[in-house]
Length: 289
Ligand SMILES: NC(=O)c1ccc[n+]([C@@H]2O[C@H](COP(=O)([O-])OP(=O)(O)OC[C@H]3O[C@@H](n4cnc5c(N)ncnc54)[C@H](OP(=O)(O)O)[C@@H]3O)[C@@H](O)[C@H]2O)c1
Figure 1: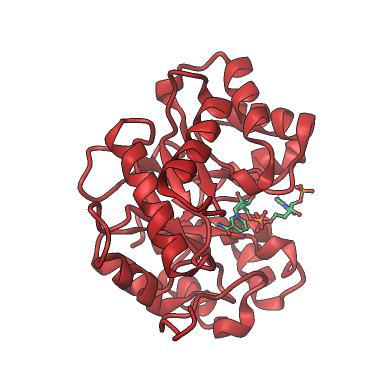
Figure 2: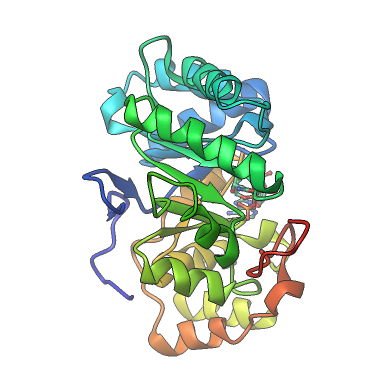
């Protein structure tokens, strides 16, 4: 996976579409109001072009404001949002998605990627949301569609109802302590891009001695090691920060490369499901799932 040629403009192809996704993204979970706008403007100044929001974050309007204020061409940006509530019918769910598109990019706008936020909405909810996203995709209101927090069983289940398969992206909690190897390998096999949320493990591992040793070897911050690790794994990390210096630092990860040995050491930190801060997916579908 290691590529010495990685840059901030590096992209990955999405399956069955000409659309590509910038490998480095920027998260805005828990970034309310003006903080969301200012953090996105700082990120765009630092060179990020990929922003990750969701209906649940209640800041889609602020993402739209930041896009407008940036003055950057819409086509140069990659904006993701997510839906976490099935409304009861495909039409109502589609309307909810359309409202997100309007908030982000206006009446005639689009989003680059629309994700099902969680598998935790029951079989009928998953089917209904996917049907709404397929309509959005076919109408060009979403240039790509995918899922989040889906295990192998959930993606396999989609074969029974999806017109668009595979989902182009699966966004999961991914960092050295939570590598979710089964679903990651499954996605790689099917060309599904693995997006890494909480790639900094929410900065809870800043004192980890192994991580600090590798950061010291490379003369960089622990958070820079974690972002570089995700990039070299072939994931698209979505680090979040509202702090201008950190936003710049998190994008400054192209002047060093982790060695194979360092990658192996970080791989060795995996704690399986118990390493998850938010969620490790279940790869088996349960009866009541
Ligand atoms: N699909 C899902 O279910 C899901 C779930 C969770 C997250 N996400 C997405 O993934 C994004 C990132 O995940 P996350 O917000 O959970 O966690 P994260 O990016 O791993 O960590 C964010 C935390 O790390 C701090 N931080 C950032 N850069 C730092 C640096 N250079 N040095 C020290 N601390 C630093 C931030 O503080 P400050 O902001 O105060 O600087 C914040 O407290 C989210 O914003 C969201 O877009 C998706």
